[in-house]
Length: 94
Image (cartoon, rainbow, N blue to C red):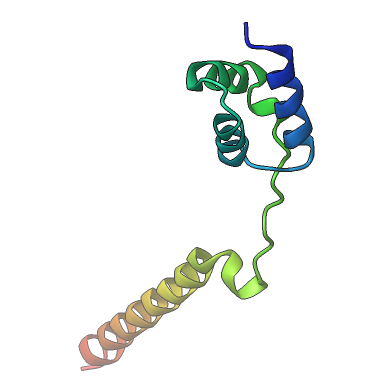
């Protein structure tokens, strides 16, 4: 089990919002062995990390798939309309 000082330092730094990599670097620079640092970081787990807020996208970037789907549906309607026009006026009206 890692030293209590290491765990307290990690908890304090995570509460301050620092990433795991910078915490690990700081501990290694203070002379702690890497296996002990890794073990302490793994014991604390991901639930101790602060949550990152997702960046909200502007409405134009939220769903480009929807815009593409609408454009394809309009293109399909245009093609089907042209085919029906051809069938009705060209073939049936002879």
